[in-house]
Image 1 (tube, rainbow, N blue to C red):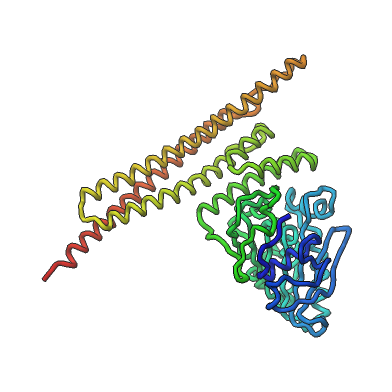
Image 2: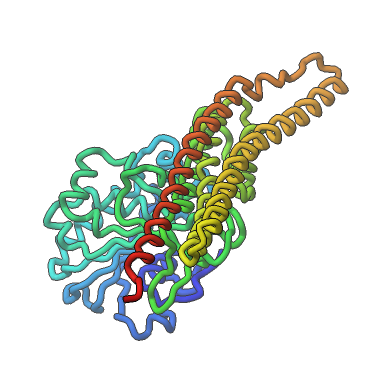
Length: 452
């Protein structure tokens, strides 16, 4: 468990304090962190619980007397840890992950919030926050508010949660947009957290999505988990975020594809909670997407869609390579701009083309290495398994073809070849544009700044 190191952001402070074992837990103390001392005082009025669904929430107001309050915070607690017997998981996390079911705790949320909105009519600014499971509860619950109730919502600021679009019906999705609630929902997510990236490859997502500037590259299952609060960097109450770049987007897409596949297979194979936990921990420990692919192939054989993984993995690799390539081209372009020697310019342009050629060769090499490494590892594992079976006196032998699809490999390689040709054409067009712009600049300079 890793806590915040800066408590100057009120929403983060509230979300963390909803958990029992935290330094400023609402269950343990009325003290606030020093960073909140100069901010508005919030008074805890009620703890709302439902043992059947696992729901826990806290109602706070800006006045000790809720009847005189004008503002409120409604903070929902997420799930503490992975436990397949806990109602947080049995009735909420697992049905949502496996079948896009709406979380049951959202019914607790909407019932209690609507009751309180009707009772405390003087409160005209409602703020909502929560972490993990709580993000699903809050967003789903808000989608059921009436138009009048929606106008009282000031903001919903949520941390480390998946997108819930697929679990909502058309009426709920339209209600979020028509009521203006969609624009009041803001997510802060960790790109290394499997919960945060779930469903984040979709083009249509709820609310405003921000990816945080993390302190480390820990995974979800590490002791200092990427799903925890420690990874947030806060300066003067503002959460540090990163640009939603091509590299970041493709990294998110790659991880989402992997975990979606895992979820599908978990559902189909009906694995035990212990086995699921082991798979998640192993995947989380693999820092590279290729390592995750190799592990899943070993674990599930040909039931895994290698082509889908490879497509997203290559997109991620391309993004990282393209950023490096772009930086080198920019550097060379600056040299072109400061040169009036056409020979030097030609040499520099040829250098750019050389970089492009190396990049394209690397795409092909990386793809081939993925196949070679996967084949070799699988063959080694199968040989070891067959040897153990023989020693044990069994006549059964594993067939390599069951675990690896040669036709699929050829399809993958053909796809990469087509991609390489398309990228080669695009990059050469880019190079020509760079050179043409340079020539126009030189010509303009030579004809515009002649001495009288």
